[in-house]
Image 1 (cartoon, rainbow, N blue to C red):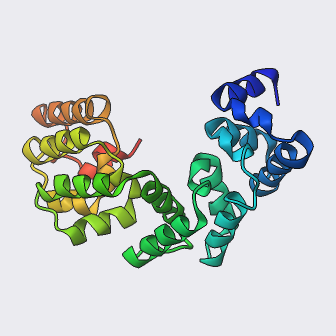
Image 2 (tube, one colour):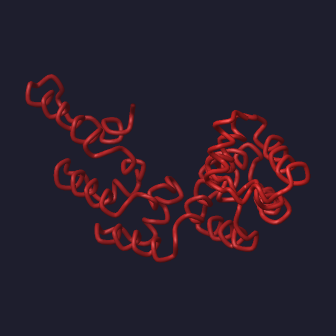
Length: 227
């Protein structure tokens, strides 16, 4: 770990200095290394959420990892979750268990990579945030079942901002003649940027159509999601 890494971590969470180097910080770091199988990934995870070194592993980290294993989540998916969002395994184990139960009840498969993404999203999104996002999708004619089905396919659709959802839905429905139900079945259409992807690619497709260089507009998933 470089001096810059240490400075970054300590500036973010100086209380770590109150912890024993040998009896906690090194033990926590080594636990993460054994899980992530990489010093670089461990450093990246710690920089993302430095309190992961502050609390003993048997308080949050290890019990949360154990819960995910208990529900059959593959080790590599747990490692990816810890690497991408270490905060997700630094919550009350009982709270994580409730989230995991909810995600499984919704229909997410613990063996699939999207399961841990769904756990991450549910952990980050407040109940009011979930309800607000649900209302935004419903305003476009989605049912609650549509929203849950979309969440199973692409959990990040519930982390997309309200403004972006409205803008993308408006563009696809009113400019591209796309049915809201099609977007519900292909929620990854909500990921690209409006100005960086949707508008430029739609302009190219319309130009090609106007010059009769193509006979029909490409499938929207192909047009906007294939990079």
